[in-house]
Image 1: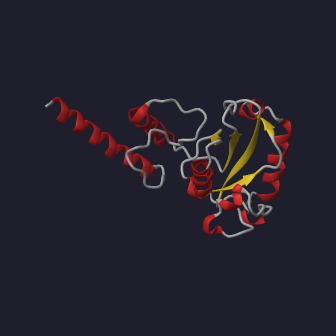
Image 2: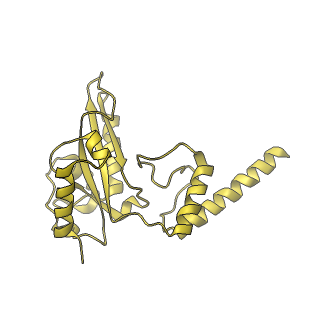
Amino acid sequence: KEQKAEEKKREEMNREIHELEKQLGLAERDDSYTNYDPLYIGNKQEGREGYWSDLKKKAASGYKSPDLIWMIKEVKSGLCAPRFGYGDCQVLLLLQKDCYDILGCVPIERGSLEHIGNGSEGPGKLPRADRYVKAAYEMMTFSNDYAVRLQTLSECGNYQDYYVYAVPGNFQFSDVETGMDERLKKFIADFQRKYKKQ
């Protein structure tokens, strides 16, 4: 009896979660999700019930993912690679497709991970974020000594609605994480002036 009651409770929770996901405009998700954005740096491990509670709060406040999201990309190689969270990182901008001139942005280099992750978008265009993330993690399956970690600094709901732009150069992880890198802030402000649709 207890087990059946528990299963029924879980089914009801999952049903409500899917209703909230629809309400928030999230693409269809299975029952494995425990976070609005699995790559968000501020995620806590609160399981499915924590996710349910978070969705209720987001639905009540009318939450929408920002139109520009910073993503930190760390790559380590070598069998004794240092752990993540220290040293240099790359910064990627996730651009909401309806808010930015995606085709106007500088084309990406052929042969780069950004280009490989392009899928059917074709050369010279920015890769869609969901394809980019998939390609980044698939690269690890081909190499024993390559590791990548991607983390967003704001929560992104639908990766398929965003495109990835790689900011030139490397940055200090701690400066990016805390939003203290002045060079990066200036680059993003200039980028938004140039490419954000009015």
